[in-house]
Structures are given as structure tokens and as C-alpha cells.
Image (cartoon, rainbow over all chains, first blue to last red; front, side):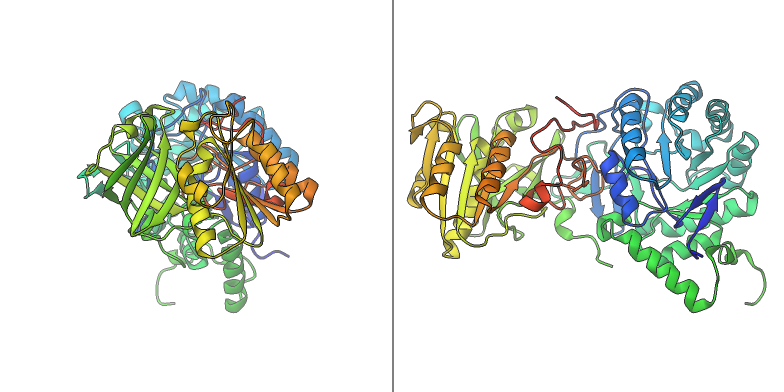
Amino acid sequence: MNPLAVQIAGLALESPLVLASGVLGTTASSLRRVAQAGAGAVTTKSCSLAARPGHPAPCVLPWPGGLINAVGLSNPGVEAELEELAEYRRTCATPLFVSIFAGSADEFGRLARRVAAAKPDLIEVNVSCPNVESEFGAPFAADPEACGRVTHAVKENAGAVPVSIKLSAQCASLARMAVVCRQNGADALTAINTVGPGMWIDVGTGRPALSNRVGGVSGPAILPIAVRAVYEIRKAVDLPIIGTGGVSCAEDALQLIMAGADAVGVGSGVYAGGVELFGEINRGLAAFLKERGFASLAQVKGLAHREGRP
Amino acid sequence: MNLVLPSHAMRTLPIQQVATHSAELKSFLFEQTFEAEPGQFVMLWIPGLDEKPFSVSDVRDGRIEITAKAVGPFSRALMECRPGERLGVRGPFGRGFRPRGRGLVVGGGMGIAPLRYLVHRLERDRASFRVALGAHTAPELMYAVDFARVGAHFATDDGSVGEKGVVLNLAERLCADQPVDVIYGCGPEPMLVALQQLADRLRIDCQLSLERYMKCGIGVCGSCCVDGSGICICREGPVLDKAELDRVPDFGRPHRDATGQRRS
């Protein structure tokens, strides 16, 4: 038996590691490559109804704590995206999660219907992108009511495809947000998106270095925020959680699992670790289970919620 | 766990000197604050406008050189930049040429730029190499005097410099004259495809520099991943060898734009 196998929303994954949306997720070929490198599932870059070129560069910058990005949701539009998905399906059996993004609940519904027809393994609803605020206003994930409406609209249109809502760490109550998502039919939650927005100023010119001026912060700097978020959500609901944020080694992934995550997103870690990171973390997780005598990751999940002395 | 490479973070440097080849073709020199290999590239940022990849066209005397031609809004704005102006110069990025054996250096149009640095490196290392360069007309053959110094052969469409015709004919003849172990190439993709076919026929290796739409430069966004193998051109390229090129089904075919859509 594979000790790293996990179940989320009725899906069997060979590894808990999920390629997070936004990294190497534009084409079938790069998604397949990450799958072959050891991911249990891969998530596409968010797609919208119409094609978007995104923000001008610089749009992704490394800094000592990780990355800051304002790619601006560039994507070829849902119709071209569906061709990529079909190509991926023809050549790779690893579960495929499709991230979607829209400007209103109604548009989210239409997009979900179109994407669901291609039968992805899961639809991830990006309601928490922090770097398109000038275009779309505050993310839906900041407001439980708005988030509930989007969840409802997507569920109405997604048919049998399970739906995960990608939350932001930045809302008044993640517990409340999680409950609202569940009440509106969410099958899983992904937490968290990038944090911020933040800003990085080039001191040589005294100007913000990202063309969008502000961008989402990711990488090691946000791991503790992601761990706290997963912990809070796990306390509030029993939905599967894809814990995402700042993972760059097996210990980071274990923190999220111990906080209550069922699966673990890996995104910005690819910058320092390359796609080989997926294999490395898998080996690290397997070694931990063996060394500590756990038969599966399920035995590790949520350990941080125990009270009293260990 | 390796941390962030400082060279990838934003840094701006004043332009030290501008060498004007023509109104639309210039070289920009910056203080050399990092090492770069021939074939590697930097991301050049014009604050308030955009950031684009440019191959390094030379490194010497403590200066790093970028050569650009006015083709779009960014490069046209670059032509207006003057000494003293600060531009973002992040890098180096990617994997450059890996010189070995007897080389044939083949460049077309703006592809000549990075080969200038390669030729200087081959010269320094006393490597055995010959050079064939092609362009539409004489003004596009930048640094022709410097290349002529190492015995480069030239071809132009109008015969204004060197022989009249395309550089490919020149390359084929040079390969027939003397044995070649590896073809180094940079230029328009149809020329690169022909060079790969030439290398195939001669059963020798080639190292060709590919161009794809790039955004992040650090192997994260996925914009420049090729079809098939998913090789990430900004991180594992831009210079690919023959075995790698065999795993690029969109080599010489339409590839992707800023949205990720395939363009014909």
C-alpha cells in the first residue's frame, strides 16, 4: 500500500502534493511534466471566459522571503484552455484540477459550466487573487456573502465535478468563510492564496518594481500564515482542505497536514527547487512516516489539534 | 534548500555607454556586477514601461553589453535611453552555450548579438572555430569589423557585405570544407530548424538558442514552456542541444503569446 495515498472529495491521489495554480500551469506539457515529477494532482493556471494577456513585466520577482507576483491572471481564455486540458488528458492520468476566475458570480457560473463539460477531476474557484484589485475590486474571498454567492453559482453549474473554493488568509473570520462555503455546497477548500498585496520598491530608481505596483506575496514567508489558516478552517469544518502556501520541503508539508490539510499545494517552491521538488518532498514524507511508525498520512492529519501533553 | 539568487532580484544600473550601430540598432553597456556565460540573457527593465529578455552580447573590461534592435514599443523606447539613465538589469538567466570541440558559429540577423560574446569566449579559450553570419543588408551586420578579425564569413541578401545569399549556404560549405563537431546557432527559427537538419545530416551536435514568450525569467510562470517535453526555455534554455531539440515538437512551428494562446 502507498503510504502517501490520500483521498480528497472522493478523489484518490497517489501523493498529497498538488501543483498550486499559477505555477507551470499554462500548457499541457508543463502540467504533465510536473505530474511526472511526482505531483498527486496538478492545477491549471486560472482561466477566464476571455483571453487575458496579464500585466506587463516585471510581474514575478524573487525576494529573500519568496516571490512577489502580479502576473495578472494571463490565460488563453476558456476555449483554448479546454484544448490544453484535452491534450493533457490524452497523455497523462494524474488528476487534473482546473482553476477558474471571473468578475461576477454569474460569470463564474457560466465558466464553471463550460469547464465542467471537459470533466476535470476538480474545479478550483479562485476568489482570492490579490493582484487584479484595480480591475475587479476587492476579492470575493474578503466577503462571506459574496464568496457564498460565487460558491453557489459554481456548484449549480459544475454538475458532478467536485468544487474547491480557494480562500485568502485575509478575511475577518476564516471559520465563518469556511462554513459559508460548505453551506453553499463546496466540496473542498484550498487555503491560502498569495498574501497581500505587497510592494517591492527598487531603491535604485525609487519605483515599485512590479509593473502593477502591488502583487501577491508567496514562498517561505507565508508558510506560518498558511498553517494558521488551515488550522482555523479545520476547527470550523470537516471539508477536505488543500493546504497551500510557502511549502518548500517535507517538513513544511507536514506542518500543513498536522494543521489539518488533506493535500498540500506546492507553487513558489518550484523557483528554488525546480520540478524535482515534488519527488524530494514525496521521499521526505515517506521517510518521516517510516521513521515515526505511521502507516499513512491520514494518521498525521490534524495532529496539531490534540490538547494536553504529548 | 537553495535560496533566492540575488541576481534574480530587481536591481537597476545606470547605462555607462551607448554604442550606436544605426538609429535602430544600439548596444548598451553597464557596469559588470555579475558573471554571465555566452548565450545567457538578462531581463532589461525600463521603469514604468515593461521588462524584456535580451541576450548578453559581450562581457569584458568590467562591463556587460546588451545589443538591441527597434522592433516593438519596448525596444523603440530603449533606443531613446541615454547614458546615466537607470535600467533594471536582472540576471543572468538560463543556460548558455557549452563550447566543445571544433565549432561552427552561425548567426542570422539579431541572432548575431549573443554570438559576439561566444566568439570572444572561444577566442580566449583558444578553441577551434569558424564563423558564418548573415543579415538582410550591411547595416544589420553589427560588429562586422570585430567578427572579420576572427575570419568570419558573411552573407547578405543584397550582397552589400560578403556573398549574396543566405547564411545557410555558407554554413553548409564550411561544414563540407573542414570537419565540425558542433554548430552553435542563433537567429530566426526557420534558420535554426535548417541548422538542426544540417547537423542531423552530418551526424554532429548543435546548440541552438531558442526564443519563446517570457514573463518571469525564473521558471515559475510557465509562459515559455515548449510543447511535448515542457522544457522551460528561460531556465533550461535558451540554448538547447540536439537531443533536447528533438523533444520540442513546436520547434519551427507556431508558439505561444502573452496569453498562452498558440499563434500562427
